[in-house]
Image 1 (cartoon, rainbow, N blue to C red):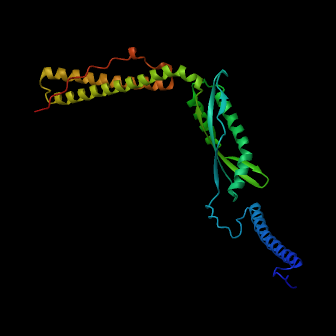
Image 2 (image 1 turned 180 degrees about the horizontal axis):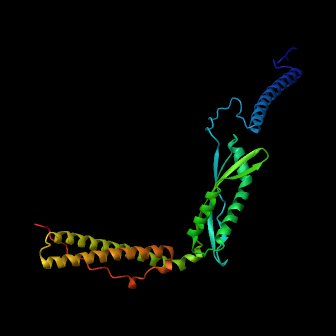
Length: 280
């Protein structure tokens, strides 16, 4: 092969050099592509076998089974008594598996089984809510928590993979009924405050009567003081009786809100005795 008189390669040599260079580039690209494909294939096979890829720099997984917590995608609505208003349930499910599953595999099975868990919780809530008035959301939540405590773990299986679900639920009122309940709740708050105030007054009167009775015991020879002591003891017993009556009324009202004593019918507190002077 000789160059042209002007020093440039002959046309045939140029095409030969370009062909060799193209074959070399194609060979190098093929080798690199094959190596990348081999590494990707090894990772894919390891993922399907639920094993860590060879040579991966991922952090070690925590010991023990994985737990994935999922909320229901929307509030669960169940009809209250009368089928006019509803209760709304915020459901949460904690999923785990006794097998050593990777997080993405566990997520796939959770996505597969969660509709079944939501349907089961909806049936439980509907059975409990059917006979409850729409303002008794607390009673429905207690009933649901009791039912879930009796069967806390739900088990699901597909093939050789078994999952465990621990459900939890919180109940909310229908927003349409809140304006009707607001005056009633405000009245109950006022009654609770009045009850606490009456209890404090009764205990104060009882304590003053006890102090006076203790002071007058030291002057038992004086007839007038003896009469005063008897009066103080009577007032102390009256205060104790009044406290017991208030506590009894409050216990009955806690079980039946309609049985609470209205403010204008509350028993009058006993008149407290004057503060005793400090003994000389």
